Structure formats: structure tokens, C-alpha cells
Image (cartoon, rainbow, N blue to C red):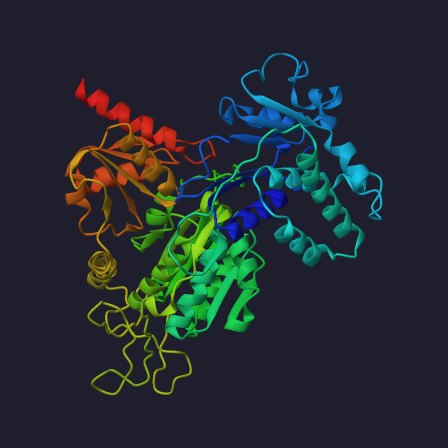
Length: 595
């Protein structure tokens, strides 16, 4: 189903629709087929206008078996269309997912329109001459469904057949079978009276330029490549495979032509260790993982912080703790990102808000890391990583400059090299090992100010601790102030971070349409340190609501920092917020406040 959804997404993007997607799949490699736990789904929202979310509930649901119906029926809008594969609606499959009776006969689908299509039988007939037979033929039934949906939404089949030809080979049996099933599904809609209508979703009016359909993981990888280009440094990415971060490593490994070096390490500790080594050697170094991997990397991240080397640590959050729900989204690593190290070890934390924004956030993380000689934590999440949207390719001339100057000469009055002599940003010089005259030693032991020699003096340790803290705190003056959309003061500010961006914006717009116009929204890219104007923004509204996919971590940070009342809106279901949920919370807050 992920494949069919992705193909329809690309066809819609090529047509010119604005779109947003929400893939959902089980963590198990071979999840039990026919059970609710094994259901894989792909939600897509297409429109002829700017949209912000994958939609609260689908108007059309294609379900290939009873388990998929059971897992998704509650999301379908009342009056929506359910297209089901009738060949799979048999007693054996009902028992697997827990239906006592056929849901088509017990009245539970009365509020929907139901179209039963024998997809398996029709697929086998369609691919009979393809060279694929038996159970293998049934693997093409998703393409039958994709063909039917393509007809319903007035899509041409060429982008899909071109992809099939490229992937499987037009003359190969599997390629022929998929194309035959696709056309059979399309012709089923075109020639039968089963569906009496089609949808026409026109291209969206979007700024002129060249667009591509992009996921968060891909955009983040491209952002790292762009940052390396801007800094004129080779990019090194060390990582250990982990869901949902693995896509970044896979994408970067395709771009050796841009000077990208990737390394799949034997574990998380090795991955961050070799990344620190690459940074020491003068590379733009990054490592990526998810929450459990960050827990393993933290000792070495602290080492990079002590040595004051630039390093980008990507954390694509998933629902936890431990293995948790590895394919579901959550924002529960914020506290760990900011505080989860030993000793006093502050480092900057930034977060991507959407698939396309992951590109810019990666560049920003690299800019801070290089300018301030510090590790930076870049937070993404499962929703941002796997969902997709049309993305306007940027003009490289508009990207920020990122000059890097390596130390080339001794900087001490006596001709020695002082590795901890600082500039106006409190950053120390970056000297590549092997540079004549710049021999120096780095390590995890406390450093003497300026010389970098090992030093156990109590006063020096306190001085260095406060100096490292001050360096990070000053970054607040080097980042964009928090931008507020909507009235600059009023009843409600909805403040978010990470992948809640689209739901918050859409929820605010719905509240405005309902007449609640004194509502604003803002989204934090920089979570440590906060933007310098954040306190004044918070104090400009009667209510501040912070929706988070955790138990209120940003909420606690804001209250501790600014001593203002914050209303936490927490959701821990492994699912993103719906715009309707945000809108309802806004209205409830205002109405409650009035009473």
C-alpha cells in the first residue's frame, strides 16, 4: 500500500496539486497478514489550494481486507466512499481481525457509500497473459486499486507506467503484470456503472519555480549536502540503521558525486565516534539516529562538546521509550536533547517543522555548529521524516553564506598555538591535524582556558563551565526572532515545534473561519536557546496553548524559563494532531475563558 500511495502522490504532484501525505506501517518486517496490527496504510490529501496537513479524515478509503477496514473506518468522514476488495471479505479474514460478522451486513457501514470490487479475481484475469501466475499474480492487486483511484481522480497513467517500466522493466513479467493490473483498474472505473462520478482536483496556484515531491528524510539529507557546499567542506555522515532515521543514510549514500562520505557503523557509539573524528580532521560531520540511539551516543556527544568541535546530531524521534512504537511519531526526546548529558553540557537544539523545512533546518544546524564550534542537536520526527509535500527547489544564491576559516598559523604571542583562544563568538580556532606549527591536544578532560592543557584547578573548571554555557546562550542573539502569524496580541497564542506545524496552522485558520479571530500561531525552530523575543510574545496573549506529542515537555521548559502560565495540550498516541483537534482546543479555551 505504501508503493501504491507513493505512486499516486507522485502522479498528483506532477499534475500540479498541492498535497500532504501520512504513511503508517507496522514495525515488524513480516507483520501478521490480515490482523489489525499488520495493517499498512497511506493517507494523501490533494487540493487545488495551499494545504497544511494530510487531512483529518479521508473522503475515500480503499481497503484490501477486513483488518484494514477495522483499523481505518473510524477516520472516514460520514458519507465517505469505501472501496473494498470483496474477495478478501471472507470468514477466515474476519476471524483474524476480530469481526464476529461480515461488516457489510451488520449495518455498521450504513453512513458510508460502499463499493465492493472483486479485485483479486479481476487482477488474475487481467494479468493472465503477463507471464506471472498463481499467488504471484495477486501481488499486482494494489496496482488494480491504484488504477481505479487514478480514474476516479482524473489522473493519467503515464507517470505510473513510466515508473513501472523503470523499476521492473516493461518486458519483464512483473512489470507487465503491474501495468496490466493498473490499466484493468482504470478501465473498470471507466467502463462499469459501479462508480457514477469522478473527482476533478485542479492544479494548485503556487509560486512559480521548479518543484519536487520530497520527504523529510530526503530534504534533511539534501540540506546537509547544501550546507557542506556552502561551507566548502567535505560532508561526512556516520550512522547505524534505525527507524525512522535510516532514510537519511540511504539518501546520502547516493550522492558520492557531491563529495559525500557515508559510513554505516557497527553500532551507535561507533557512528558518533567516527563522526567526531571526521570533524577533528576538518569535515562537516554529522551523525543520525532516533531516540534510543541518542541515548547511546550521548557520552561521545559530550566529548565533542568538551573538545568544542562542530557536529550535527540528527534525532528523528519515534514513540518510545525503548523500542516503543518505532514506526509511529512522537516528540518525546526534547528534554533529552536539551538536558540528556552528564555534567553541564549545553548545546543548541533546532527542530524541523515539515518535510520541506527539514532542508533549511539542516543548513541552520550546520551554520550554528560551524560558527560556534559546537555539537548541535537537530530534531525531526517520524511524521516529518516519512510524509511528503511539493517543495520549491531553492535558488542557491538565496542560501546563507557559511564561511569556514581553518587556523593556519600560530596565534600566541610567543609563536605557540593556543587551541582555546576565542573569537568574538567565544568560538575556538579549528586547526586540522598535521598543520605545521599547530600541534595541539584534544580530549575529554577539562581544559585550561586559552592553552587547552589539561587542568584540574577548581576555579578553572567553574570558569570553563560558565564559558561554554555563555557561548551557547549568545546564539539567541544570532537567530531569527519568533514570527507570529495572526494578531500580535489577543486571546490565544498556539505555540508549537516540530511536526505539529501544519496542524496548528490549519487549526488556527479554522478557528478564524468560525469567528474566533483573536487567535495567533507561532512555531519554534530554535528550542535551545530560545529566540530572544519569546518572552515578550508569550506575555502578549491571555492564553498560550502548547500542543505537543509528548506529556508537555516544551510546556515545562517555557514555564521554568518565563514564569508565565502555559496550557499544555498533550497527545501520546503515535499519531499527529488533527486540525480539528487544535481548533476545538482553541475554541474550548476561549469559551472557557469567557465563562
